[in-house]
Image (cartoon, rainbow, N blue to C red; front, side, top):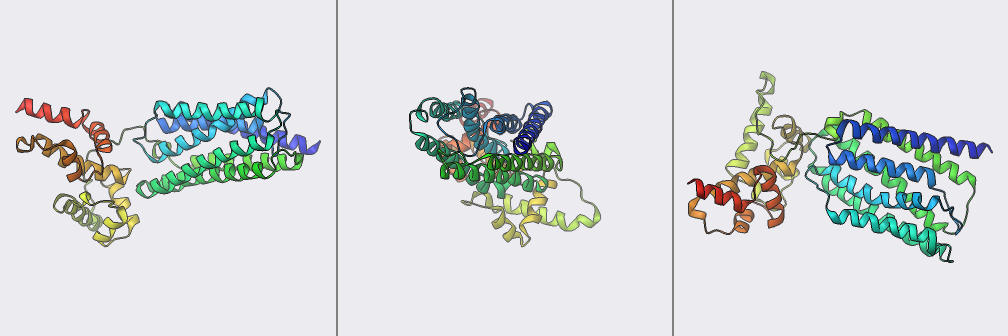
Length: 353
């Protein structure tokens, strides 16, 4: 009886914290995609807290099936959340919703038809393999995107949120596969509920330690103005580094190099990577290193597109000369900065000439 009450208390605490977190994100950052996805992830996690148990049999209560389906589909939301969290230019596509619906529908069918039909282990194994797959995608996205995040205060918080959620979800998925079809007792459910409550509380605390505007920037960073902040006397060294950086960008056009990283750029300037990250963020106003590079690439492309002598040069040639690796990312970045496509920009400049 004690374990049952303790488990219920842990579940209730998790649900309450998650609902408060979702309400807070929607209240303060409803116009930010990452915050909306974070709220959706919190609501899906609340469904998980209500419905999850370690080890299940074919006898799943009917009212549990929709909650379990929402809980399983939440792994797709988690993947999308990590993408939006580390990529301010990320946009939802119609097929993202389709993937979520397919995963949730597969989980629901497993609860209602597959498992009761005598295929408990198959159903649980397949669902949790899907969960592990999306966790791997989320971790890969985090690893790939983390180095280009220039805001020091949010870098550790973002990684902690992703790693904590991925570790809990991954261990649970592996455990479910290992004990599929067996009920392992109240103690396991109580421990799991307690761990979930602690993780939710830790994530909420971590988010409180950083400015929400840093974690979920409201203003678009597609084309930040490159405005130099007048340095104080003791910041003369920083200003020299900024001047050297801008010479690399303007004279050597180092942004054209394939796979240029902030580490390579810091090496050219002979300074630690963290210092260059801080300079670009705090002095030039950029939050993302790729946006910083793309801004310079787009300025070069704009000059080429407006040049009458290059009127016959294909857009893709101009894009690749400026440092873009393919036409799609160039078109998206160019339109985010100028509001028009490269072809439209070229036509407007030709008409105005």
